[in-house]
Image (cartoon, rainbow, N blue to C red):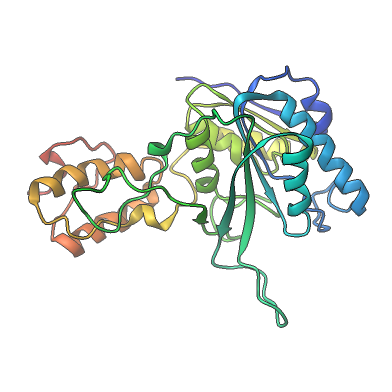
Length: 311
């Protein structure tokens, strides 16, 4: 399936005003947190009143263009997230679904007070009838039990994804680049192939890159011309796998003692959990051999048959 991807250079509020009402299936927004970071345009250094007004204006337009079945995710720092919640729920009459905690292993160090190790993400929908493809984002079970859904468990509202470190190959010249695996989960669960996903603060272009690989149409809006060029270049590069993964995706359930059940499960695991994560497959293969003494063929195309297994 081919998809349509666009990166628009300009102000998010002005650009969204050009969209038709109720035309967007999913919005993933990572606005400036107003912490004084350098995005090359002064957008992160507003007064309190200016920032609240800015938030009211862009969320109003986002709500207008969101379909009744649509979802919006918004990243926000702790200083303004309570105000954002009120604006989304009270002023825009959106339906609250989740307050997601993105937990990461490294962050800013502090000598007084606890070092921050998470970001918050608010998930709201335009109605109670919204897209939620749970099977697309399940995580492997810890243990095999006949009563468990071996397609996996609900990942919950605490998501563990590493930052994109400066030494990583996919690191872009942007101060707040988000992990592709984090955005992948949102896109998979809250949209379908061919749907339109909008990122009003496109930044390094992660949302569009994820949409490109998951057969969604995408529109990114970005104020900084350099980031627009960066995104265009990123979209032209060869895809070898998303740059991050929830570590739970690599785990192999314990107690897969029945050979037939184990072979059936292992033949499905890569398609279910590691389809766009080639870099995690070696960890999975090693874990299978460690737990069950079974060696798997390192193949990108696996089917539900014994050709998966080495003789």
